[in-house]
Length: 443
Ligand code: ARG
Image (tube, rainbow, N blue to C red; front, side, top):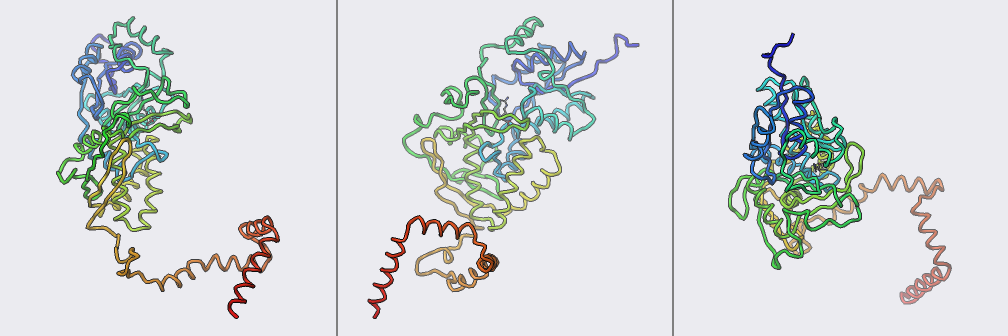
């Protein structure tokens, strides 16, 4: 029989301070009779002050609230692999939200262990990717933990209903910053969804952006920036040594103030929905561009080419919430091996919404002037090209010869025939005339 003194079970909640997760606190207490321990991750998001967020968690009824500054680890452990992978989901989206979730989960699990909590809760909806990332990550870190997803389970259908429920339960949430958009942001960028953006034809309103200026309002002179890399990681800007974290902050400023880094795309979510997504990721996009430019210089061709496929798989894996999977681990081992010689400097030029690589140099550069030049000091063996081409084309030549012998003409021959037919006899006559004329001049 339960006595008054039996301690309640505990749940660790990923808390942001917004309406959803505030309502979660009360809902978890009401519905499951759980003690709630809130965890707020500082990952470089824009916020009203995390002390305020903590106070809100406590005044809403959480028995504890931990604010954890995760920025250093986010840069050093997460954004570093993302850069090694030049990670862009569907070649466009630098995985902003997808990268922060596993790190937040690591802390949720750690704190759950500290408190002996059996449950972890998050405030994600039932149709996004984030629920998948939270739950997959938590399960991989500790498969014995149970996960509760209040927002997915409760029957509050709209924001208005949720506000009513909150008011009826004495939850105070500031409505002043109520935006029509759903926003998730961190060091690596900012995701903006919902509202008018749900119409893929509607141009994003100017007010959705906060990290980037309108390119038309950007300075009329370009900004140049040199980025120093060591073994694949940025270590300095304009020859001034800096931590990767500081470089990400600085590049967000530099690229953002030049109007670079906006993305407007239709994205395929893991749960099968196509959604219209707007992002701004000035620092991420500029750093990935610079990093790729240095790899172009330093990676041997077949490594570079093979890596492209791994990059895409890595991005998909992380997008799909499999950060802690053995496959992603194996990809990381490959990527780490490729980064050893990615050391050097890249010069970027930022101007009114554009970012261009205008220079690159490295002690590990595989660019060889004597091989590349068309000038007199060319040392490339032109004669070797002949034999190379003979052997390179040999298998296909044998195949073409067989086709010819069998009378089975390939499509490209048929195209040539059709073109000749289309041009008509006139052209053939004209050609015959030119040949006859050339021959008569020879005589
Ligand atoms: N579609 C992006 C992703 O799946 C961004 C999600 C951002 N979340 C949000 N609550 N707005 O990574």
